[in-house]
Image (cartoon, rainbow, N blue to C red; front, side, top):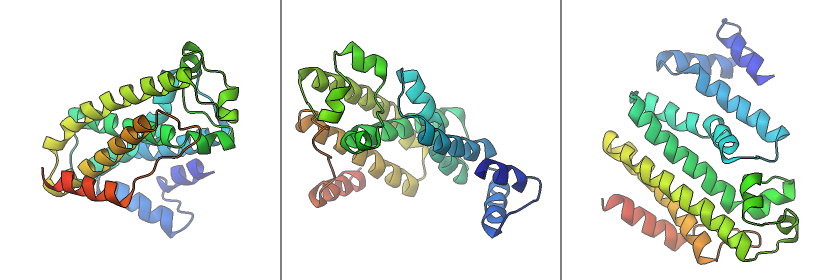
Length: 215
């Protein structure tokens, strides 16, 4: 429904003031309409798809659900080069993956698993462990693998910082530090996200702000 409504906006047919304002913003800032269609596709996919067979499938979801947000922000600041977009994609994908691992205990209640089925099987983890909340060495190794890969994405994405204006750089740095802190908490709890939901404490937030603004 929203896709059709959005498409009609580009024909000058606005269902209400919101769609006209969105169209005007996209036109004024020369934004890429595909990013908005991708976000709508991800929303639809999240309703109908609850398992991902491979990491590439999961990356494809991130390309629609997370990466467009970063790209839109960069374009709003008139940053449009391909290299910056790629670094932004790495950050946004890492943030999306971090959220998945943080929310394992919540998502399983909705019958959703955002860890590739192939890798679950590779590490010898049984699917019923998610529902039964059975943490064991196999599950810990599975999560460790996910976390290490996500750290590498954050590391790659940090190359974007030098390309950003000061204010935006601080905001993005804060966001990345928040994601990295959540990953650290998952490590500290021996990857037991089946039984716990790591969150940032007030102390964590203060440390993150200190690190971001002392750079």
